[in-house]
Image (tube, rainbow, N blue to C red; front, top):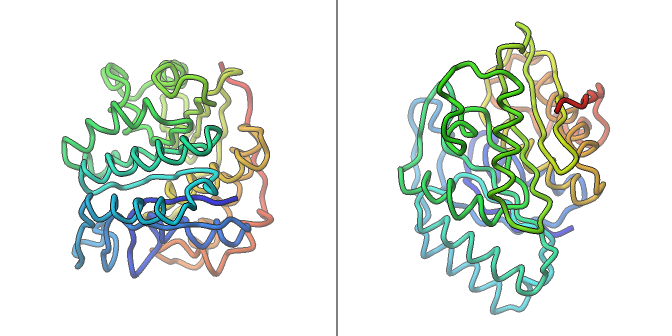
Amino acid sequence: MSILSVQSWVTYGHVGNAAALFPLQRLGAAVWAINTVNFSNHPGHGSFAGQVTQGAAVAALVGGLDARGVLGEVDAVLSGYLGEAATGEAVLDAVARVRALRPDALYCCDPVMGDRAGGLYVRPEVAALLQGAAVAAADILTPNLFELELLVPGLRDDPPPTLHRVAEAAQALRARMRPGGSALVLVTSVEARETPHGAIDLLLAGGRGSVLLRTPRLAVEVNGAGDLLAALFLLHVFRLRDPVAALEQATSAVWGVLARTAAAGQREPMIVQAQDELVAPSRRFRSEPFL
């Protein structure tokens, strides 16, 4: 499998491509990485150095790949943090170029906009592009609950939502995705009214309904877990051709990495040290039909 991954990069830690590149390679995928930012570390640490990659530079890199005649080898495009709207436009252009050569190629959009703790942390024009053109082009979306609320107006009117409301919103979002595609919406970091204390939920909406997967909440606060999950979910959807099995495999692997991270008392996910969890998770989680 070959994946064109357009995401952020940090020198220290594991977010964006720094969370996706090694795990995907460890599982045998060829990853063509384009970095939307080049930072010393995740801004969540309080300070950082580096710069945002201009959208024109991202577009030029895609153009260079096209000039080499290799975009037809791409099985999937994965996008994460964009930095600026022009970068999102370059990503959508890349998706269009790939699909012109490979109509069956997947586009997985991780609509990185913010989270409960930090609120919205992208520019309004980036959020608008994700809410509109990116959703319309996507085969797979992996928003956290905060981002789902931004993508589906009205969901946040009565917080916290019920699981039934989250599932309805995710199914409604599927109708705005690429016609004829798989239209999978994986909602992460779900804390609904029914979510027990000490647990965290994930909800997957697909053509056969929705499924719920619940895991114990770990005593660890890290950045990059969502980026890792999106990458692994995309890989396993492509390979297994079974979204539910892909959800279970990806979630089990991420939980295993985070469990090792928590046990070591680390702030950054121990992706390299816990790489065996990527291949053969030590604990398996199963989903249940929900709606």
